[in-house]
Length: 115
Length: 114
Image (cartoon, rainbow over all chains, first blue to last red):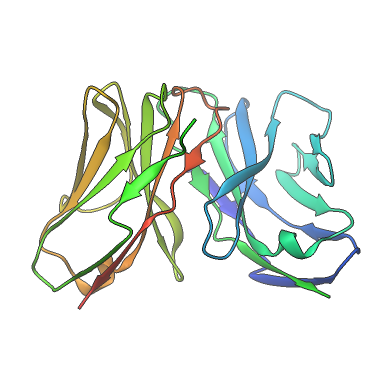
């Protein structure tokens, strides 16, 4: 069975600094998608970034980028120039390319931004 | 476009009662998924519906059920509530079932079982 592990329950970073959130996963599939979702306090969860497993190039969305290591089954999220609005729970998620495969979430990392 | 809406936003029930939660997806979205979020277990998948059919189910007891209507709106029902059912229940919609599709989440229904 597929699993997603986020080993850092909480992290803190100084405003304007860079922080990396870790995520590892386990799967026997070769085609799948990986996601980072952000859940700000008392606000709705939103997609931060998505990575297709067949793409070697790491996905980037403005200040957010990933380090996707398929062989190591690692999918870390790097946030550059951290801002106060980045404070949130961050969830790493996995979903197989095959239809009817459910999405699996990690337990999340709570990120604090220190002013 | 309006986002995903969930009603009610807050609910207090007592053990043994049943509860029905509602989710209205983004217009045009045909897939609706439900999740239970608790501090200890994180986000756990409950079920996914597409075109009124349940396509996926998580590892929850039969007390948890759901359905989807022809307009893609979805409801989930929990019967014989237990204290451990206290959680934030999140609904998410997407256009279809493709693995890479973005899920758009609602604000959640916070259920407290006393």
